[in-house]
Length: 244
Image (tube, rainbow, N blue to C red; front, top):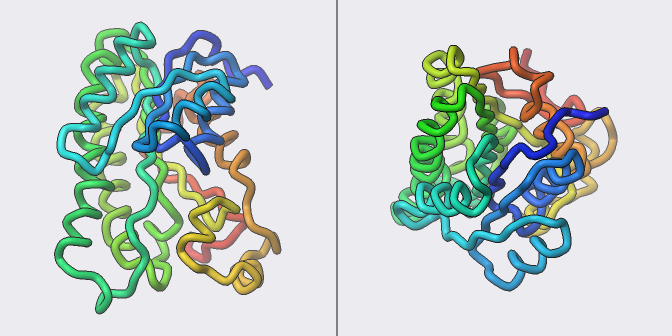
């Protein structure tokens, strides 16, 4: 399916590996001009070369980094049509395991970086009367998952941002939506120490998701075909969630 993304200019954050890379690859495959950012310079440039994207180094946990990388990408790509906010997950842990510093770092990484990058991207999108903003969150934003309490708390707030802001920019041809991955087979699954066999038992599809399945959903939301989908949080989880 041709999504009509040829020559659209996109920035995908946290894209040196995992879901960010899969989303960037899906956009490149449909003809978009894509920039990717991550904090790891060597891996970032290797990924950019491998998938045909431009590399923009940024540590999104630092104040102002989200806005700065949007400016860099806009200059490097000749504008910006699509912004994919993907900052990865905060450290795993239960409430008793996490100190104030971990909570503050989680807020800076998940919430403040999203706010700053979106604020920087919006004026240009408004001026051109077209834009797509996608935030990669998690099914934990709707149904909390044990041992990732910071994610459980912060990600619902991003959904509130998406729904609220979508009302303000819809008339400008801009959409904001969240993609909620379930348990996807990435490095993150290994790093958080989840038992994959036990996870699969919980998933009606009886398997972990593939990164490219999340990439396909994000690419669709970035397309003209999805112009009337706005302010939504859409799961890609193999029917994991029980809520309506």
